[in-house]
Structure formats: structure tokens, C-alpha cells
Length: 358
Ligand SMILES: NC(=O)c1ccc[n+]([C@@H]2O[C@H](COP(=O)([O-])OP(=O)(O)OC[C@H]3O[C@@H](n4cnc5c(N)ncnc54)[C@H](O)[C@@H]3O)[C@@H](O)[C@H]2O)c1
Ligand SMILES: CC(C)[C@H](C(=O)O)[C@@H](O)C(=O)O
Ligand SMILES: [Mg+2]
Image 1 (cartoon, rainbow, N blue to C red):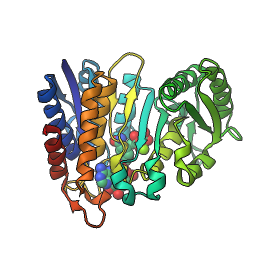
Image 2 (cartoon, rainbow, N blue to C red):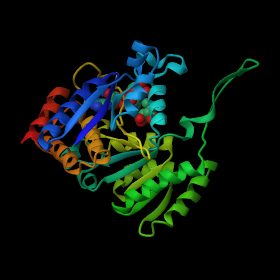
Image 3 (cartoon, rainbow, N blue to C red):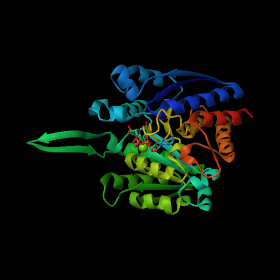
Image 4 (cartoon, rainbow, N blue to C red):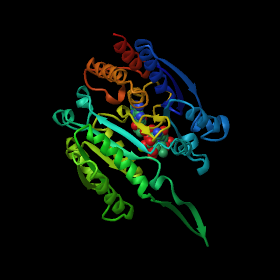
């Protein structure tokens, strides 16, 4: 197959880990007889520096004319203090909105060899295989009114948690569709004891569930969900939740796998190209040191192969190579354990490439 991939490395470790994903994809293309053409574009702080805006028109065009989009990470101290219209996150949020990628899938899969790097015990870890389905283009991130005010010397700020029934329905449906081919359980996470949006969310979840009689639906308040993820994560199959809750719960859940550097994501729309990015950010504290874990980015590329290109065998080959590397005792610093070999970002990528080639 011939595919065009938009590549947006972004800032900080984004560039370092993107190198790894491309190297791995090149091996996949060679092995399986595909052609991947990459078109690079600017986003985030990098784009502010070069074009004066975090999301240049050309980047949107490149993404929309590609079969899929790979993104590293955006942001960093150099730009985070900028006036709000220039914050690099605006570029990322703008891109998600432009592409209409409302469904953010964040699989939390534990590799057994990382059990000791996790916050939990080995026996619990082995059973963790959950999928966080995060609504990505609505809620507090986008609702209006939003902004700062100063009335008669009284400063205030507002963000609005707004969802239409249609926005709720389509993300909840996506969660049920995923659960149908997994362990047939959806946990809808909300704050229905307080929020109006959550009350409507519950009603919609109940309605959607009628179309999926084989899938069990449970509702859970978000504060309890945060605790249950640590207490007994194996109880979850698919978690569906609104934008902000999903953001927070997915960083929390990443530690079940040992590190934020292990968590990949796929953001899907109804028809256009999917956006694939690690869950973590630009990690300014370790940027430029060649020590970031590239596996979340590499596993995001695997999700692209699976969801955008229907290359299931190829995606499995990448996941299997990652598993073998971990089994071989190779680690980046964030997942290091006693007796393992610590590798740089480039060396870790090279190991995945070696296992893929064998
Ligand atoms: N999708 C994105 O582009 C995205 C996501 C989250 C944060 N951000 C931005 O990134 C910047 C930094 O944010 P932050 O520090 O809160 O979050 P972060 O995810 O960048 O880093 C949090 C911690 O995890 C570590 N970490 C993250 N990824 C790692 C990896 N691959 N390997 C090893 N360690 C890793 C970092 O070193 C840091 O200690 C901010 O500007 C923020 O807005 C961007
Ligand atoms: C950088 C930020 C805007 C972003 C988000 O909150 O969506 C990030 O934390 C993520 O999880 O992708
Ligand atoms: Mg986040």
C-alpha cells in the first residue's frame, strides 16, 4: 500500500521520539512491501518561532491531504508564558478541532516485563488491559464563553463545560463499539452528582446502551474512578469520559504501565485522517538529552497502522518487537529496573528496529 503521512515533530522530546517512529515505520514498509511518504510540517512552539503562529495554514493543509497524522509533542517553558493566542497548546487543540478527531483512544496495556516499574504488584499488572475513550473536541477545552475579564477592577476568568447531546452520543457509541469486540464492559465516568453535563451524559449513555445489549454499562463518579484505577484497575475494560476527566485519568493510568513514556494514543474522526500522538508532553526536563522513552511514539505509529491503514499484522509486529525489547531487559531511564540495560532514545529505537528485522 502507498500512504502519505503528515509528520509534526513539534517541540522538546517530540523531535527525538519522532525520529524513532519514522525509523520503525521505514522497516515496516520494507518488510511488508508498503510505501510511506512523509511530509513534515510545523506545530507548537517550533511553529511560533518560524511562522509566528502555533498552527500555520500550511500545516492544516498538509494534515488534511494526508492519510494519517503523526504528532510528537508541543509546548515548553520558552512559549508557555506567551499571550493566550500564541500558546502552543492552541496549535494542538486547533489541529484536533480542524481534523474533527473527537474520539481519543488511549489504550493502557501493561507489558508484563515492566511489572516492577509499575506502581502496582506483578499479579495485578498482568491483568490490566483497559481502553480510555476520551472525548477530544468539546467540553471545558472549547466551550464558550472562555476568557479573562476585568470589571471595575475585579479580575475574573471563565471556562465553560458545554456539550451537545450529539457530541455525547457519538463518543459514547464509539466506546460501546470498542467494548463489543473487547470484554464487553463500558464504564462511563462523570460527575453526575454535581454537573448538568454529566446528568445528560448519563441519560445518553443509557440510551446508547440499548443498541448494545451484550455490553454491560456502569456509571462511576470521576473521583471514585481515579481511586479505583489504583485499587483495582483490572475491573475496567472501556472507560468513556469527557475531555478534561479523560486527560487527567489517562496520565494517572499511564503509571499502571510503568511510565507516561509508554502510553500511545489514536484520535479518530468519522471520515478524515486520524491523529496519532503519545499521551505525554514535550518533557522539557529531559529534552535534548537523548534519554526520552520513544516507545509511546512508536506504539502510536502502530495504532496508526491499525486504525488508519487496517494493517493489523504490521501493527502487531511493532507491538511484538516492543515486547521483545522489554523482555530482553532493555530500558530507557523512566522504566529502568535493577539488572536491566539502560539505553538512550536512539539506542532504544535501534533495538526495536533490530527485533523487527529478525
Ligand atoms: N500532546 C502534547 O503535545 C502535550 C501533552 C502534555 C503536555 N504537553 C506540554 O508539554 C509541556 C510539558 O508538560 P509537563 O511537564 O506537564 O508534561 P510532560 O508529559 O511533558 O512530562 C511529565 C513528566 O513525564 C516525563 N516524561 C514525559 N514523557 C516522557 C518520555 N517519553 N520518556 C521519559 N519521560 C517522560 C517528563 O520528563 C516529566 O518529568 C507543557 O508545555 C505542556 O503543555 C503537551
Ligand atoms: C497539551 C494539552 C493541551 C493536552 C490536552 O490536555 O489534551 C495534553 O495534556 C494531552 O493529554 O494530549
Ligand atoms: Mg494530557
